[in-house]
Image 1 (cartoon, rainbow, N blue to C red):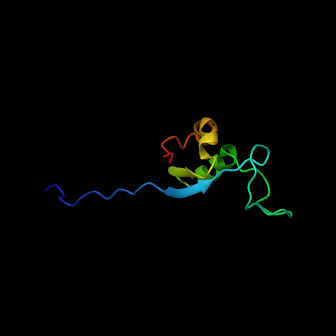
Image 2 (image 1 turned 30 degrees about the vertical axis):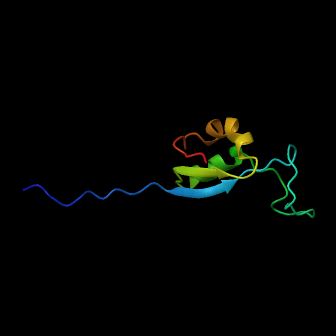
Image 3 (image 1 turned 90 degrees about the vertical axis):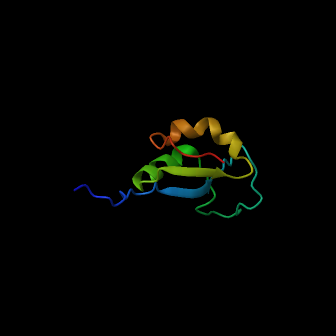
Length: 86
């Protein structure tokens, strides 16, 4: 007799959102002026390996200048290609 229980599949791991910033291109008024872990550019190429290492399958890009990073996102985040852009 065949099983009638529904198959359980693991939902995708989603990073609810993250921000990119490029200190060479934009001014960020919230950026600390003193040395800090935040005081460097964070770009799509920095995020791709972190997502892959942690099994994140989808993510959202947020922020005032997020659209500026869209051309860099897909190539940098492959193989996480089914990410959602917001």
